[in-house]
Length: 362
Ligand SMILES: C[S@@+](CC[C@H](N)C(=O)[O-])C[C@H]1O[C@@H](n2cnc3c(N)ncnc32)[C@H](O)[C@@H]1O
Image (tube, rainbow, N blue to C red; front, side, top):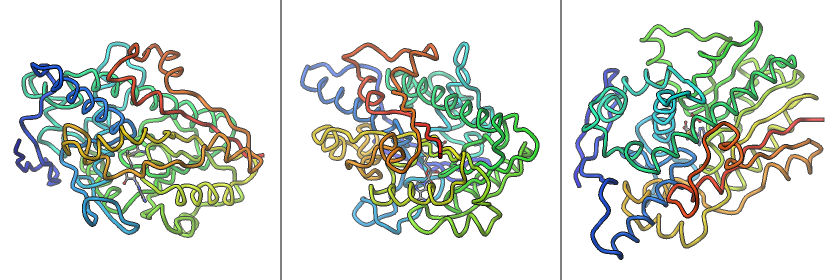
């Protein structure tokens, strides 16, 4: 396998790997078993947004540190690109569950394999992890479903009168630009500066305007991000709709608890939060993935996550007086007409660990 650098139309670099294949099963049963473990690992790996082929881990020894940083093409930042790519493909499905037209804009800006994914000929894209494999189909289904779940949550919060929205780890979330927000909504988008820079430069260059008052807040969500949020106009006396999508697995369990504490402390009565969470992978599955090929097996993604037991939002928030509704992803996929592949399945591995939680402050 080798890789080559490509430059997107906005000057952001994308490393393209070639030689990745998920197409033909290897000839012998042992090799097939290894291949299946890799793909299963890859699915679980990418479920919350990993497995980007060009990811570069900016940390000591390839693992995370408490102060590591990234941009849209590296480390944790690249996971935002991967989920945006899945949203772009989800929008192209017959009767799509969710349509995010701006995902295309980001992919074309990065260029290379990401632009080919939506604009290229089938033979150019058939080896991409999101194409031509059971993993790709199911991951795309899941991203469409999760987008709808959180879209519906935010619009319901606004219908109930909430006008302050905080998106933690916004990445390439385009909701500020595409949802039909009522008048007076402020959307705060929190992420690392480099990720927000990429997003702003791409959308500005393409002439897109937000449909709400959009406020960027460049922070590290492992630190004191509330001060920066307040500094940018956030009012803790007003009810807030918080969104935590595709984030928790990338912070330690302690940082997650701190994040929940901050949400509770900054929430006026009637505030709510919607949270995607994933149970840890079984130790053997995680070890297999961590030791696997960085790209094909999800090894690079494994180095980005904290695969550790952590608080369940559906229990943590009620212990702090909030009410919680927990939805299993397998049930939600069925509800939106994207039933999970029958077990045993390469694709079934990840979604069974995932759930979506909505909590409401007293
Ligand atoms: C899988 S992406 C999800 C992006 C977006 N929520 C979505 O679903 O499209 C993960 C995002 O979390 C952000 N992130 C992870 N850890 C962070 C931290 N400590 N501080 C700020 N952002 C963080 C990354 O920069 C990236 O944009």
